[in-house]
Image (cartoon, rainbow, N blue to C red; front, side, top):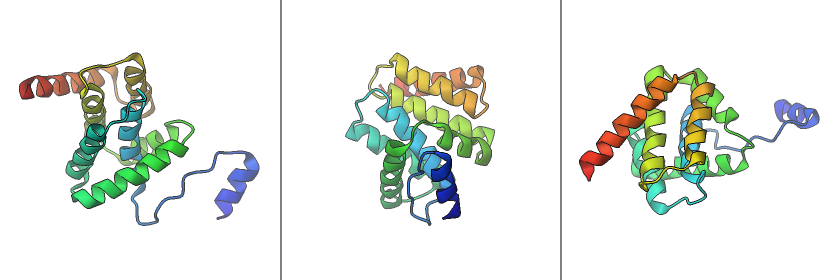
Length: 153
């Protein structure tokens, strides 16, 4: 409570209210997936379902918990001024492998409509710098996703 008051006095943006039982790492990870889906201003039901599948796998949760987490992440992402508050949590709480899994998830969402625009690619470039992942690892993650997508076609 005191933190919120001090932030308000300091002019810092209000953080989204979250359910106290929600893991901040899971929320941040999911909010970044939502950001990848929304960046092209065409957030589809198929992308929401893909996010649910990705977080079910990543966090070993059921469909109901995934939908609830995604819904909460959508609200948090809407209220966020930028991706820093999410990326800092991921940077500090996730292993390199988990960060690369996040990138693969983002690429999967971005490439799910068989199109990639400059804003979608920009969000990944911004994120990799914030979570300390190399351009090479990001490129490898994208190639793995592209290979999976072409195998499914």
